Length: 212
Image 1 (cartoon, rainbow, N blue to C red):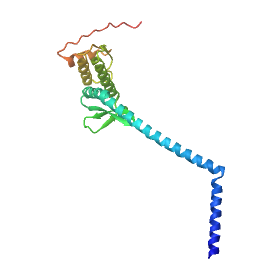
Image 2 (image 1 turned 120 degrees about the horizontal axis):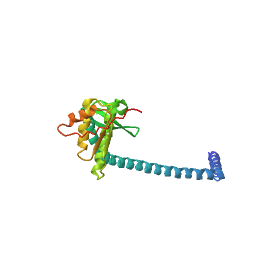
Image 3 (image 1 turned 135 degrees about the horizontal axis):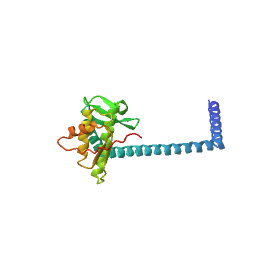
Image 4 (image 1 turned 120 degrees about the vertical axis):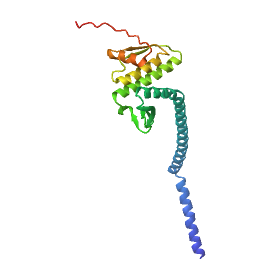
């Protein structure tokens, strides 16, 4: 029995010596160093990831606050103008996000149907951008910048009813800054007079020169 114990003891001692010899080899030290370096790099990358995620969240919160403070009022005003210009076919505007990219869309009167800009008719798109333009001009005027609003054939794709709505919107803007409407469609002068009655519409008609 003692012989077996002695034999097992010798085997254990030999194994310990072999393990120690293996641990003392240069490549073992290199492996240990590389492992420690990898752990350090992992800790650094983890800290960097957490910091970047925090920065992204902070940036998004800042952007959302800016949108709420600046774009919110402009979008609300443009929504009201767009509803007027489309004769109530659209109730408001909204901003959708596609992969964090904001996209403007219109909400129909049923408050359910959402129409992206690319899904609107040419006339409706003209009314949309007129609403956005007027909202931006009103905001600029409110900040003390007085510039005339030049409207060059804005109603090409409007029917007479929407043109009347457009003239009423321009007349409202005319209470804040000068509005000049240019067109080569003579019938729009009558549409303006009808839409703005009893206000007087000043019409300046240029002489037509025959082609040379």
